[in-house]
Length: 205
Image (cartoon, rainbow, N blue to C red):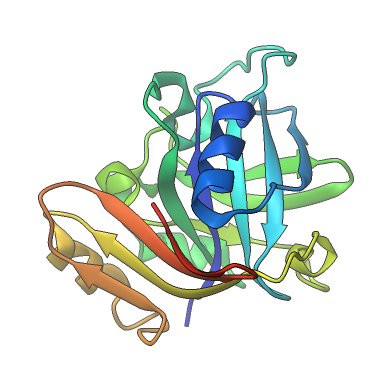
């Protein structure tokens, strides 16, 4: 089984993303860190001991990377939105052999002293516009979410819509928690998360 690891809001700037999340969830996103290899930075919110919400944007203070940035951020010029979801695996190479062919390769990323592997395509784009999840393999030990700021938010459900929903079903339908994750046919890619917050149930898109 693959486990839902985190959901990612993509934004042109962290400021825009923070406002979107504040307006939707009623919380201020805690600090995160920087990814030197990708020229990006983020903010991170624990959704429990082994899952989290990430907000990511291009870091204007960082040097441009020698490759396209992940999450297709080089081409992103829209309002902040849930841009993709990420599944955890204990063997990313094996999982990639069964994943969408556009998932890319396992790439080592660092943030501070933390190091991990995540699937990234060579051109930075995401399969099925982000409806197809990235894959991540953390080092052995406690999940990083257990060390993130916890403001009492918990993910209740995640819905992924896409015209090619049958492809998602065939690739991941038997490998995920279907009590938490729902696939739905829709006119375009859309991810929505129902999150329990201290202010009540909210939907983040």
